[in-house]
Length: 344
Image (cartoon, rainbow, N blue to C red):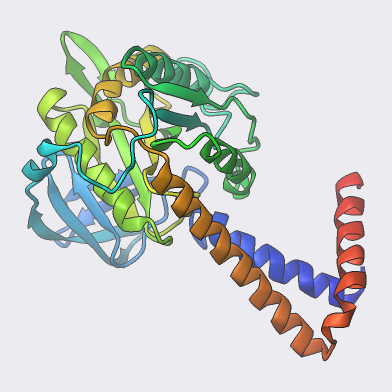
């Protein structure tokens, strides 16, 4: 591969990376304490955090990341937020009804995630798929059409979100009202991630929304609506919400959400019970109908990707002082290189 093709490949991959990576640094289940300015534990995180990120705790206290110290994230207390307005959901988010059976998409970026007493990771499919299936069945009982992808995105590494991006995009072709990436966390603490509901031990749920995309506000609003509904209907089931640096493929559309059902030291049954109960929260937090806004947002995302790709190509041509007449041959060379790389 010559120098020009390598440069174009790097620029293209950078474009994809900016939209697909959860952050510019990726975690592999590294657990870090999140503490207040006095050193008191607020929560624990396995996602990368940065200054300005927000965490809403189970009691609706809003914390803002202000730095790092001794391997811990430091947060300041912004106060307790009032989520009562979200109890009037479904909110009017400009969604057009398109039929009596709205669609919800479900997929799993981390395909190996599993629960105790077995290993934390299993060959495809991990036990997380059983949690997704439980959520699917519970939502279908509530009248939703659920498109559940069982695609394999292993291994669990920094490229998993790049691999799952195609799955998420295909789910959007179904005009869903929401798309849920179902995970489990990796905090090694049972008490931290369990609660009791109706006499049953149940996994807590954490929501993760990314800030590095154009849907950051709508996804955060959706997360807060679910928190409000959960506090009312299933008190104690919510561990909290992270609104943090990253993308998590949530640039593809509004109400693209990441849900973590418990952690690897909990049992599969505790996670499945949580998924079944949490379907009530999801259903209560969604507008009726859906589809048109999702297509619009997805189309906007595609446009931005194309524009960035064109910009990257323009920089390449400028640097190399080539004219647009070279594009045809360049495209052939680039395609050939990609095919050769796949064969290798």
